[in-house]
Image (cartoon, rainbow, N blue to C red; front, top):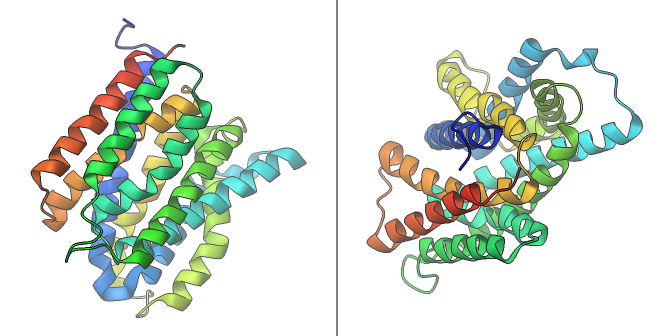
Length: 284
């Protein structure tokens, strides 16, 4: 077993912190929905996140080639699309369920990147856990079909974010990469969010919560994820991200009082087991 300070374990700890902050931020963001709607929340999140990251990392000092810009633009577009689709999804369905559906993207990456039969066992266990995490689609509490479709679309963007994020991460520091990607995301997500906002987002009263959402949901976690992407393969990164639905469900329980059933708790245990198994079997 590797020592606790090995790159693989440090990457796992970094990724765990990133997932915790991003889901805490998503829970706070959902509390902004009654004020400015999901569109206004998205505009505040990407706009403030881009400004914060630009001031800290000053990415304009980088010199990028044409191919590097291509990866960076796709990475930024995936980042913006993921946030747009996801926020409109969790307006209609619970946070934990939305993340579970969105995780179809990382699972696809993990499955396509698998080279060993042992890896497929952990992917299958994560898939089974997510299936158990979903509610009965035919009952009285059936999910909103539009919310489901938006969450799955966000999953597609998440897959592209992982795939092109690893390639974009080779450009300069991780922070500078995220700053450029978030700025590209803000260029199209911010105006869309402003148009779809249900109230003016340019008010001082919502600035403290908006800043908290931007820092917790974007500025901090995406820098941490970029650091982890440099140390992990896309396959192991994707399976480790199976912790995300579990963390989202816990954040929804603690912050939004979204209750979990026994079956959902069992599903969370299966997902965490898959993540731990993938980590312990990872090769350098």
